[in-house]
Image (cartoon, rainbow, N blue to C red; front, side, top):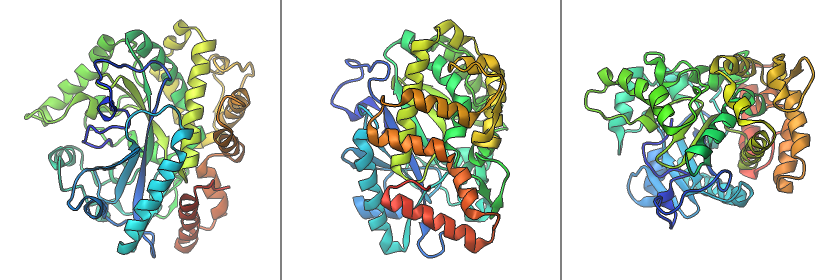
Length: 425
């Protein structure tokens, strides 16, 4: 869930330019947000210490800490902290060191609490029904309302960490193009970045368990999440009519005081932020280190550029969410091993075969992107594609041994990857 604060990774209020004077065009900048678990250094179990972390750096409990190029924020649960670009940045490579420095700074502070950050999109043995501690400080009335409506103690609420990628549009025309391309790419993103194969101390059989649980966390009001794939809305007016208006109408009986706001409430896999001039992609499981997340973010941007260069807008906008959802569900379950047999979909990426795995599709795209990204990100992206999703790499290291000690050993290795900003290969 997004932080209540409007100090977004893409908020123009964090720059020196007024949003009325400056609207960023397609792919001109990006904003990136990363969520990490706070865990005990000895046991790796979750520790609800985000408020204590904030108090250490600010002197009092606050929801945000401005650390220059990077902002720290709370989320709905107190064992999670989000770090994000403090306003738009030109590209992903420019903030690799900044994100890593902030990971180290946070870990340095948490050390006095015998705690540290842990990566991946789901804690492998957290019991969300007994270990959930909601954020109890500023803006907690919104979190309290969510808890009353949805009961936020399940895995789909209190045990999920993601990376959000924000990409800009300057006007309605650019929004329509960007939304069309993002909708088409969303289904295969779990085949690149799934990192949540373990829940409750055992394998789930699902590559992207975070996204699978996320799909159902607001079933009481289905219009909030929809099909995860957004509807075919390619203008601001169409978006409000198709998505925001029904959602706000459905939530109204549960929110008589009008606390919830449409941009905050929308939980699709990509959400339009007309207040910021950006679309936020939310289906990305967080990886093992900032280098991996930023390589994924840059690669996604470059694939979207290719789609808009090579495919007609009419073709991109044609795809119904139900067709795309079928591919998404396959990739959520099977990751890079998902078999894609929709030839019309494959043709969007220049593939004429009758059926290939999602992993093969990403290898095809990686080859097309070679040389378009900074060498550090290009190399990391290639390693991710060649070695499979982090979920697959975790499962290979576990090697069918799901004892608590073996799972803890593997996740301790992932913590070390975060500490060294290196891939888990």
